[in-house]
Image 1 (cartoon, rainbow, N blue to C red):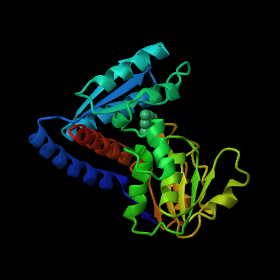
Image 2: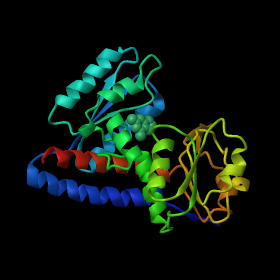
Image 3: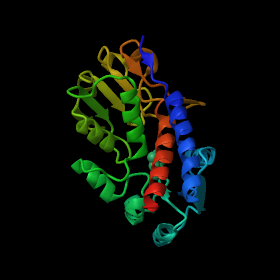
Image 4: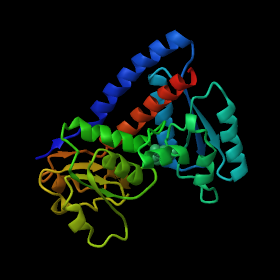
Length: 283
Ligand code: GUN
């Protein structure tokens, strides 16, 4: 039976540390770190995520504001809002919540965010620096959170076989680059991968981020693996990961649950990035 990696506990510890740091920062500078989230349309899951980002900011002593825009806003109106937030000196971090409605181009919106305020780490300058191994200002929050969870096991990453299932810009690509930076041998799988099971079986470190409930069964998991499940799939009235937890837990050495694994870490890393952005803005 695997050891459960409790993301909630780890994230809470990080958030408590951040709240202390925020308090001293405000005392020293008189400035409150502020995150501006841009939320377009009515996606119910996005509304829930954004509310929890606002609450988390408040709990950490930061300001979290959300700009809620109608689903039929035009691209230039969205870009114009981002540019206005770039210029606003009271705003330290900007996050455009994804996915956007279909008629809007997420890349075009992300390109507008000032790299210094890009707490999501999705601007091409920050992603490009991540690719080059050249100290990006910010790393995408979920990928960063996943690395913290892997580090929490104390298992050395260097030389291990890491398999990332999913190639999104938010999770799959950045986490693969971070694992590579830590000297893992990295394979990225996706929907066109032939014989996914055979590739996944090689993984000492497995990151599943495809959005397909239970696609990774225990019979695909190597004995003693670290299994990180990024999937958040609504199945009936329950959340289910991309990993079939019950069968995988008997093979893995460490495994994250859904919910309570990766999810809480994303917000903790977002808060961390917002404080860094606020500190950088005072230099
Ligand atoms: N939607 C789901 N996760 C994320 C994230 O980390 N950043 C943004 N911008 N949108 C998301």
